Image 1 (cartoon, rainbow, N blue to C red):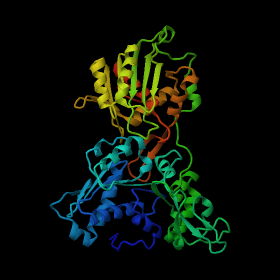
Image 2 (image 1 turned 135 degrees about the vertical axis):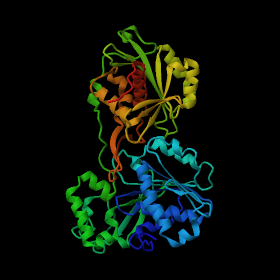
Image 3 (image 1 turned 180 degrees about the vertical axis):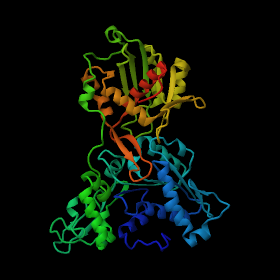
Image 4 (image 1 turned 180 degrees about the horizontal axis):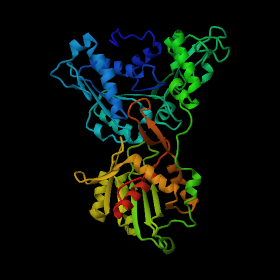
Length: 505
């Protein structure tokens, strides 16, 4: 039961195949308010009921989003559906915001992760629902989350979200999906078509872009434009909802959005398509303005080391990402008398494994006599331990990114885990601002082509735009690595720690 009525797909004919499709991976790329969350809730609940002892994991980027889904979608479906409530719930079983256990032994766990998947590592699952996937960092989260199904006989994954930029996680998944569109045949000119532009918006409903006559979304069907793809992808816009076309007041709201929304927002939230590029703090010109006339080498030359007061480093260990971004990067900074950071050396180990990289990295750090090195703690726990044994624990500081709202202190030492906890967005903000103010020195731009590409891959977005709690975060396309940026940031944090300055801008 949904909102006091029996749940039906009468007004959502395009959702039937979404429920029925037996694919291992499914993607819903949708506009807002098209029943995406309700479909996810009904689908996972039906599956939990249909299969005894079935384990489901639901993930959204923010805790607020997960709580809202649990309280307003899932729990209401369970407790306002008499048959479900009476046959499958029991007060003696766990039933709270983050875990629902049914009488048939099935479990629905709910969690959140946009950049750090640690809180879900211990959860076992047969089917994972990743909601608002556009705001999740793919290579940091998705591979780790999917490992929750490592021992499952099923291994299903459903992604859902509303598009944003062309670089976004959801667009990355869409390009690798079957790209199914709801196609409709015009009764006047016989042309088949689907919604991908404002040209389909008529004065009274959805129209044929060829002849301008009305289309009936109830008579459409799914057509895959990339049928051999492993991920079954469905594009759902507000325009194909029959209720929007049949109710003049509802269509008027769409026309008002067309007038008042920006072009990008209308495409994202109404049409459900990606558009434009993410906002960036830096330009290529900003980066090149930091370049000086020298090249970095091993071992360092006397000229490059001139006036350097201290040498620190940062290491971003390779992770379990998409392959493109699975690189280890080491960055050597020299602290100048005016506190600018000068690039003394950097090295990228492509397609590498962090354990195999440790000895190579240790050789470089010893060669430059690094006094302190900040290392990625997220994917490098074992590598950092080996590095501590080789260099001395006092010279290695593991750094763990965290998300959510910025705390009063953006960086703090956690003595229980022996690592610094650093607010990811605040760290990136602070470092990019220093670069923009030319507080760093880079070698000749010809040598910086790959690192600059990594840095320009990072763009800013806002999660949960319709919620009470919004978070500004930095993302990058899964096809564009950003390892060089984070190696620099870890080295920058090491410099801050060595000076006793542990607050960020």
